[in-house]
Length: 287
Image (tube, rainbow, N blue to C red):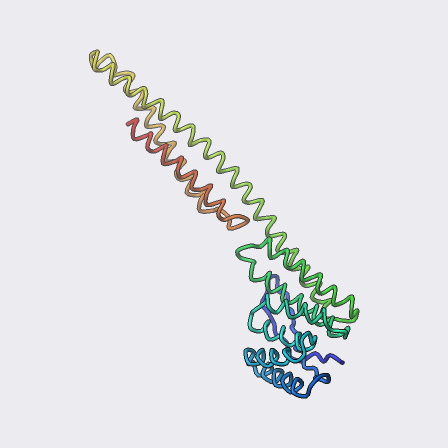
């Protein structure tokens, strides 16, 4: 059977500007019962009209009479793809490629399988870009399978190059984000060390203050006046350092990158906030 690729295609707004086309299969059904051919024709007409649910119903009835028919499975995959049910579309395309003996249909099934996998990856970009990168690598392999079967499949060759460009762009972005995250983590660690040092200073000031109070209860006020002024000066200096570090912490938290791990960045920022709170609590105790 000859596979006719439909003239219609869809354009997807994807990362790095790649454009992939999904070809509809409108091949005449020429095997099996007449009722099966009629259901396939009805399904194709409903598909062309955008009635994908009804088209799927027609294809399902046809498959019940002709299980494993590659042409029907391919059409079913297209309708599922248009509905956004990518996991089910993948299954249909895989089954079509497995069951058909027509090289052109097998190549088209691998081609659309590549499109479905690419779209799955695109949907993962925001929350799991590493997984998206892996999905796109898989889509390239499917396009290459299509080219292996049908070497002159121009659209498959074009998609291989466009997806590779998208992968390179995404990989570069992830690398830059990881480098920025590493630098910011270093800054957080340095800031945390400064906060810990302030906490130790303030704990020492608390101890000195308590000692001076005990001494004041035993001696005249004049004998502790000098050490008290010195301690007060040290406390003022510590307050200034605490305020400076608080501003530095605000700037560090505000500039944290969204990749590669927002949760880890948030946890790290919270740890610094906890250290700052501890420092401020110690400062109040030393006052």
